[in-house]
Image 1 (cartoon, rainbow, N blue to C red):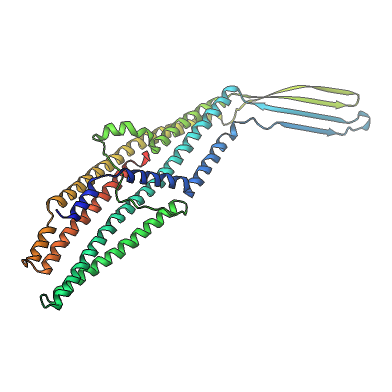
Image 2 (spheres, rainbow, N blue to C red):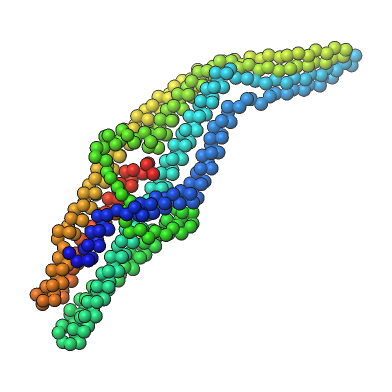
Length: 392
């Protein structure tokens, strides 16, 4: 097995601790610098504050009346009043619990948006590592093709080969050069995406190895252990709890509220002052609000059950895809080690047993195997990243 094959097998079969820390470190940097995440965090904090606005006391009410008497002999009358409305303590507690459930929903929504952004970043990092590998491979191919072209040029000058063979080697070099230009442009596009995700700051990705991955042996066990932390389920669960608290508050809001205050009345030669007590009885609309809250609670329960069912099937699909792609990557690696003809082709060409054209065709099969191994491993890494995105 020549040095090229040894190198390819090594960087496909092994995992570097530095690469792991590099990817994790890049994701941490992106999370700290991403402008969208910063805006979402501020928006979430503002929404959580808004959730507690209704949990404060009602504004006090102050009244002042100046009444002129007629006939003038009866004098004028001055009224001053101040009152404050209070909820029954159980209602205040229900409002607080409802606000906290809304806070939970806001946090789960933020986690879902954070997960989507970090997944986009991780997929881009996987692409960057793939292009680092592929670009290095194309550099080796170009060096080999350059050496072959120089050898063919000398052979052509010596009359040992013909123009057709020289042209074939030249075309092979041109194709490698075109692939290198294309891969460089695609890598630059990936790096621009990472720069955007990193808040406009360049991100240097030099790794040529992926983070380690280990698919769970059993999907159902893994799902039971991890699904509770998925934002989809967390949000649906919080929404259900919020609707229950909303129903409880609607029932308690049917109770009357109390207002306490002070009142003063002055007329000619007389002055009345004292405490005032008021009772607000919610006669209109309370039953409708309770019915609406019940309907919303039932809908939230149905949505939670649907979210749980849909998520399990979606994650199972991703699990099977990741498992299949991981198997394809293993097969590609195996093909590289067991069906490498690069040394045999070189010996046969040197011995004159095959033509230059036959050598180039055989070499293209070897290159295709390398390309397939690189692509398969990238696809497997992406599938695993999408399966475990909520664990980022």
